[in-house]
Structure formats: structure tokens, C-alpha cells
Image (cartoon, rainbow, N blue to C red; front, side, top):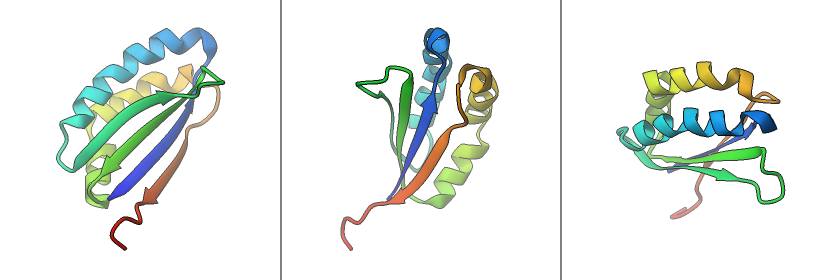
Length: 97
């Protein structure tokens, strides 16, 4: 299993718009083949710092997700809402190794 942690720093005055924009992405991503989990979280001490925590079966599923219409629409829609470029890490779980 692969885990993606995507850090999204949102401008304070854009949080409501960001949350509205991200909802369709979450719903559609959870329906994708190869998706195990797709959750949005927020830092406790910095409410402008969001993390998308995703679990995928494999790299092929991630690649298909990145090419999906809903992901592309999200990327196009939130760019001006962010205060910094996203930071994305792809991690491999060590369970069963």
C-alpha cells in the first residue's frame, strides 16, 4: 500500500472557498479503483495548514488519480487559494515486510 501526504497551505481568507472546492475531489476520489482511503485533515495549531492523507493500492492507481478529471479540476481551481506550492510525499507502508 502507498500513502500520499499532501500539505496544502491555504490563505486564511480562502479557507471556506477551498473547503467547497475540495469536497467534490474527496467524494470522487473515494470512488476510484485502487483507492483505499482519502481524507482531508487540518493542523491543530495552524488552521490554514491542510493535509490530504490518501491510501492507494499501487502506483498505477495514483497515476490514474492524477490524470482524473476531478483531480485536474481541483488543481486548476485551488491554485490561487494557496499561499505556497503544495508539498507532496509518497510513502510506502512497512506492514508485512
